[in-house]
Image 1 (tube, rainbow, N blue to C red):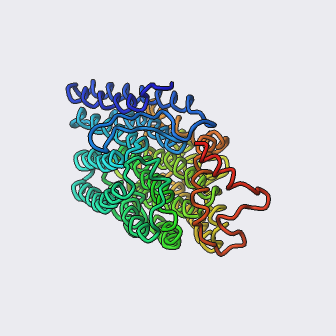
Image 2 (cartoon, rainbow, N blue to C red; image 1 turned 120 degrees about the horizontal axis):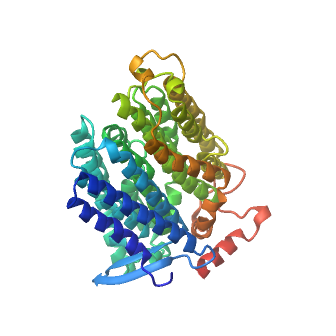
Image 3 (tube, helix red, strand yellow; image 1 turned 90 degrees about the horizontal axis):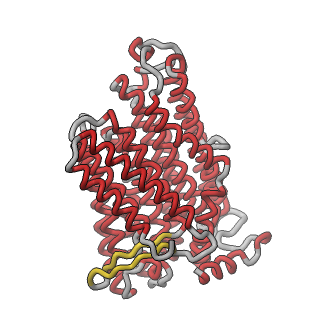
Length: 515
């Protein structure tokens, strides 16, 4: 596929679909959106199949100068490939979830979702600094509209809060980008990833980027927009928000903060660890006392994203690989859990946990699938989240046994709130007649949840298929970080080659040079 602009095509298809939706009726818009997202899914599979794991670091590159230094520059490595695959996998499911739930302004709704797909792919594929920024910020607009127009009773408040939090965090990042371009003389992200900025300046640049990515993750204490946004968003909005939009913060850390500012990243590692430790414990305890299903899952997302930041700033391969796997696994599982909430919300029009109970009696298929996703969220071996959480905690243990100890409590608390949620919804006595009368999953609902269940098990049973495309890029990142990595408090020093794998960093550096 050399020379074929597949990334531009993957962005052009949903863009054309979005425009077509605006000129179609409600039924036509649904079908246009579904076809466009399925075409992108096929293109995403082709992208994965044709990605050369042993080849160049940056593949499928496109470069078209526009004006000055600004260019339409696209290209992916293994990390971007996995996140694009997650995006195109979830989008048809989101369209299917909105098929009956959305009845007003259907063409505009479908167009907003397709535009969001264009911008999300653009974030992960952009190789020009300013192009990345445009895609990163423009992605706010369709999500803001989805929450503000098709959301719940307090949708206006939630949409403004979402927009202002995420926009304000990014203003500092733009200023930092302008300085970096002036200093390095280029807007090319691959070049900037290897550029050695002055360590004193790195501190300020790192803080500017951190302001944006911490809100996007979201990290404690700038996480408060997320529960409101999730509760008010329609089901598909919650799926794509948890599944992909939150991952942009983690991707930002991997693509910008760590490789471009390694010394500053090492300097602020304890800040990130401290905020993440608070988030893991605090948001898990808050989730434990929620009465609204969506809010509980939203707070669990903050706790899971804290495991991601802990692993990323472990400065070693296990931690970074684990963080990527947690992001991918959480994208599948949280999306599936929000769909499970949407299924029963469509029947009873309430998210209050105490309005349900005993659903395993009248909805056995639903109970089985909900149990699978609950177990995956808890991190049961054989499901998607286990691999990522295990690797992240192993990575952070090599850096700090104390941070690992606190982060592990998140796994225990996660089991507490998720199993407590499942027991109250699917077991116990059927005290509400309307809940007891709800029908089991329809064919459409099974068709939405089955691919997520299959992917969750596939990722848990054969994680190597997801890790292999990313491994060389994580090697290169680890080699870039090794000289700056701070000494941890455990017996194994971060950044130092392990006795059993001598020459590991030299190999990684050689691999990076080969790229």
